[in-house]
Length: 211
Image 1 (cartoon, rainbow, N blue to C red):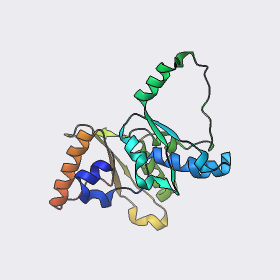
Image 2 (image 1 turned 135 degrees about the horizontal axis):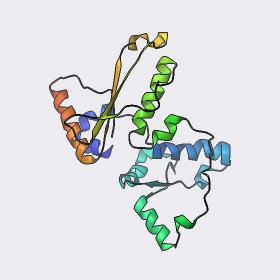
Image 3 (image 1 turned 180 degrees about the vertical axis):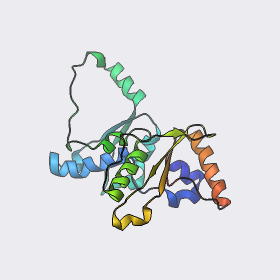
Image 4 (image 1 turned 90 degrees about the vertical axis):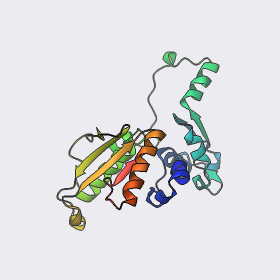
């Protein structure tokens, strides 16, 4: 978000208003989970996120990631920082007994499982939208996500809408095209291409892009 705000402000209206998986989970923990499961004051709940990207530290500090003075996420550790903490405290993961993850909110859907992975937001959104529009599950387990020819670090997928619900009949036969872009360098290349197409008033080839 910060990258787009600083370098491509003309695309801000096209940004999704949806929070990232990190911030979504933090918000759910501080609201639904605190009130209905743990039955505690959200101010007494501390959410620590472990992420591979240092940009998540900035994300948690954004002013919109706070409700009534309570942050969605309190702290963010990178995976490298977590590894250092394990080392400093002589914690050997290999020697720890095997345990199961807890399920504080019950079983998750397939879309939820892939949501936090790279490309998972795009795939989860596409699968959910398909099911809402058609009333059917996507007819395959995973999307066929392929590299975009001539553009390194960028992959795309297409799914055709067939036999939608009556209220979505205008979408019948539409090919929904999505893309996933990795790393800042590739994002810049991708955005420059989109801006060039936009200035030339060319139709943009994707409906949804995940960075």
